[in-house]
Image 1 (cartoon, helix red, strand yellow):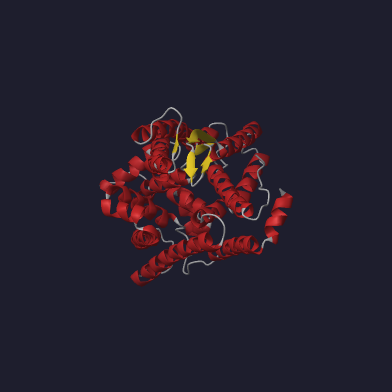
Image 2: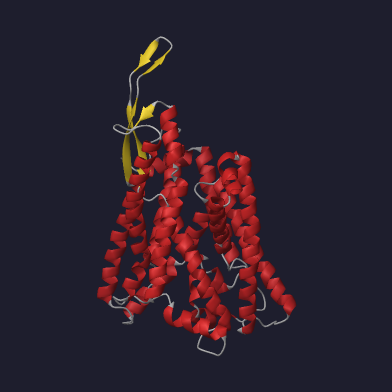
Length: 429
């Protein structure tokens, strides 16, 4: 692997792309420390400690929210906008036709709509956050001019991260948005691990539970790698062909269907949806007070906390639904069947056309069901970790899934570029 990495770094194009990715990471870290002015940091730390929404959002932003920098919202508005646009692409025929038949121009148009929607969602979220912070005495300046300034700063930070992610996808290696989320999670790892071992040394964490967590983490990483690398291979037979005066014998190949076609997208989408009730809780505050806002706050605090059964049940269901939804978008079984028919290939024992579509759909549903249940259980695993005395450790299976998944995707793209230059890949098969 080290030899392969050395060979990859000797290729100017790959070396340039890897260098650009790390340069973008450095810019991201620098932006974390660009703080909003007129902030009472002590009061802000108190609000973060009491708000689950802020804890989740800060975890995805690499600690930018804890420092209240201009990128405090992270990339969450863009993720929500992408979810809405993908749903609209399925529902609205014009957008579906634009996505499928519009080619590069159609994809650019949908990307432009996603950016506009990101601005709208980011403005709504930034406004609610700024007003809630002003009411919580986080700002020294409570004028409406400063609230507008904070909203513009938060939205600009999110748009900058979106632009940075697009630059990473274009000039670097891997998916830029996923890599920004990846580095945001990784930046929080050293602090959280140090806090956990500090608690363990003071008797705040059970050492037996900590050892059990380490074992669970290793098993989880191995299972994640298996799910990402696993494939269901559908055998394909190519008929004999006559080209000119020559006859070519039929060949045997296969269609590789990944076990986890959704990757980390289903987890990220589910987390983004779950942030909405927690954000509503930040609007209305905590505790039971009179009025609709107080009732909503009491319900969210009592029955929809991160450790509640209802929260984890909704989390599990959202992950399962988004896994099926994204798998249906990524794998177009009708196009696969059409391509097999046009190339003169067929699945042994299955007629071309609609029977081939039905057969592939049946296999896809089976493997997606297994992947969806696995991802759902992986998402709610941190709640089980709290039951064994690991409440001080926030590094959960969701974080491992995102980190390992993004790392594997990036390695796969490096391997693809190395294959064009006849180098051996990182993973020996």
